[in-house]
Length: 186
Image (cartoon, rainbow, N blue to C red; front, top):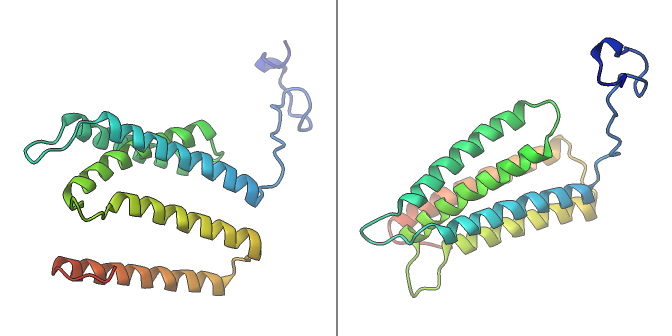
């Protein structure tokens, strides 16, 4: 037909002959952001859990090669896709989902390493579970604040957030240093 033959393409009005249909998805809402982020986060968690389960157990003497492969490949693919996604003019949902899966594979493998190194059996301290719960709590809290308090992001708000982040980083570093000397305040 006329649409597939380049010699028939026109430079007429948008929506006219020769124009690709324009996406009419409407303005972005908090609800659509929540849905899309939840789907993406879900993909990360499912692929991380799958990676954790299918890679072999780490023992005192050996680390399974499947775990090293998962960590390396997942990290490289996730990095590559993050570069592609950040330079694309239009967001591509399949590429974002592929990134989420690769990120999940990398995080699942990395979490297993961390768990093997830092998890003290019998203490009930599970670093990975704490990190996942903390991430969800921060995510839910931030979205709830946006939805219910109608936050406008201005210069004051940015300054406050940056100050809070620096405070958290400082606290984390202090915790790390104290932890190295066997002291900790949680």
